[in-house]
Length: 564
Image (cartoon, rainbow, N blue to C red; front, side, top):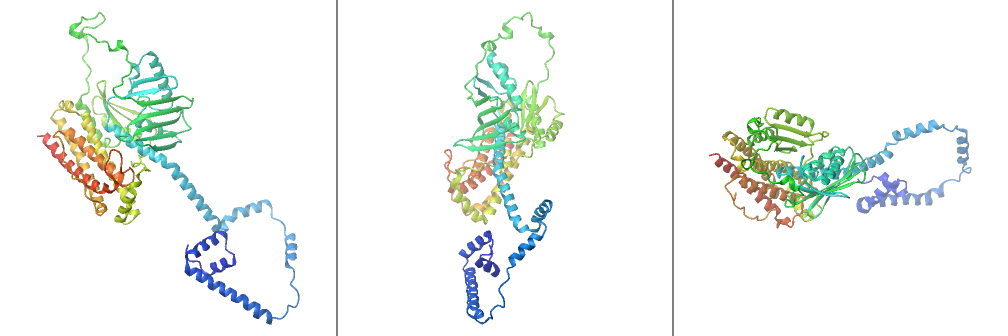
């Protein structure tokens, strides 16, 4: 508090200040020599005045002509003669009291507002962390998309193993099919995607359509766990466990209103579900068997329907790239039954219409968006606060001193995160192109299609290089004085093929993202798979940024060589 004036000190000395003001002045006097000296002077002056009155004035003043009149009895007679106010008058006075005494109720109101703000902050923080973690998991699953995976479904009475996908349940035997059908009804009544229940996209779509929810994010040594409770709908509680290495779901638990529970776990690819042997019986080759009576003559069969090709899929990716839908929108592209299927969950209706309109002119394309409520813009993807990242706090303090304080450090962290997210989106986009167009598929493309594929790669690589350079320019001044010697960068690429080079480029970008998370306290410095400690992070980060920028340039030259 500021220095109290003489009136406040005098009232403090006389014990006339309110309790809160007395505590403030008392605390201030403990630390302020100047105010204590002023208080002593005031007390000396008051003491001198009392002594003067007792020793001088009282001796020379004449005696009172008459005793003092008892005024309190007069006050009592006056109060008895005044009419008591009615209930309505007292109520109006009570309502008018805050207007006439703002200094008394304003601090209480401000304290109440601050308490409400803190409540909402700590109540909503887990929801923000859950949204960010699920959003990153969706991006990671898009980059590693492959064939349907195996899941094991366990209830209180049954255990079933099946593959994810729309038509996989039909391959089960009779008893398993009955169990799967009942579970499908249970999940669909809860508005939860049954086709792929163990996925971050399905979990996020269910969570986003809840009117009220409570989230909790916890972290173990090598996994994250997102848990959501709600009072609305048939599904009251769900949890999803993600592997921290690649954010892939490995386990989920679902508890329903009718007290049924379902546990779903990911199964290794070498474990296959039970298959009906009759369904896998070998059928003789056409040239080795006679035409059965119920088969039609091949000459009478109608021409086959046109089947979508790898070229059609490439044109779909080109259209999505023009819309920016390949850099963060939860859009999936796959080939199914001779068609290119473009699907997605949790996409805003306006965005769905935009994508649908752009793809209408392409042949053999089917758009299947799942219905969901319009979601707000996704929050910035940042890693949740890691309690084990305490080793990086001294490093953060040194960087904060280099950039001029904690406020500038927080501003630097926000700028770095704003650049890191689009950088990783470009790296994921390049990796997805490498996965979707392997060598066998690329051999089926004509020269125009190959040029289109190279153009998509060059545009992603150019944007990746620009964002890497911006990160380097932003971090160099801040890390110049706190970075030590870094390990020498290795060769650009270990192969002359663009597909292995794409994977190396992606891993290099992931390395930069991990070092950024360590430096800004979002990940532990000394993880089991990382030999870099907190003291080496600045130098390693600058070296890996330079290496990533060099890899992007080499990647562009590699793409140019493949076009010759």
